[in-house]
Length: 160
Image 1 (cartoon, rainbow, N blue to C red):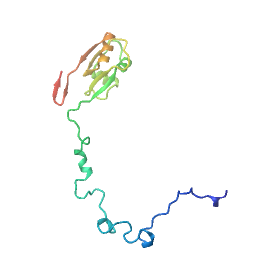
Image 2: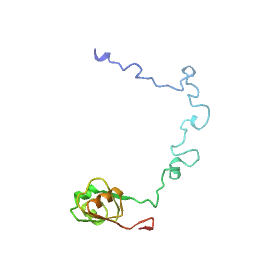
Image 3: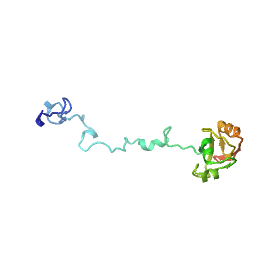
Image 4: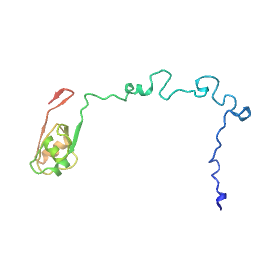
């Protein structure tokens, strides 16, 4: 095989359609553009944003279901697992949002904290959090620790 023997695979190269080159070419006269109208003219067509005068999609999206609405009453908790507490704290330690922040388990001490049950704890801890899962509470109390729920607000309404 030599360099001049190399050819693209059969069917890999397709000739482009040359429109508007006479009636015998099959795409003569109107060149596949139909007759009359904005899109048949040279330079015709509408800009991408334009949708015939209707409200364009990008302006409609905030009102379409599932897009652009954020719930003002949504409450987000920062999760902390029991196993993480067992690693960072020692026996009888008081665990509060402030101590979690200084231990590097949460970013902001003003965040709402939820203690979850992944992992094990073998020694008593005194937990102060905004929410505690059932499995976490069982593990903490089984190790001899205590759980205290801190008050927090949801959309201006105080809970607990």
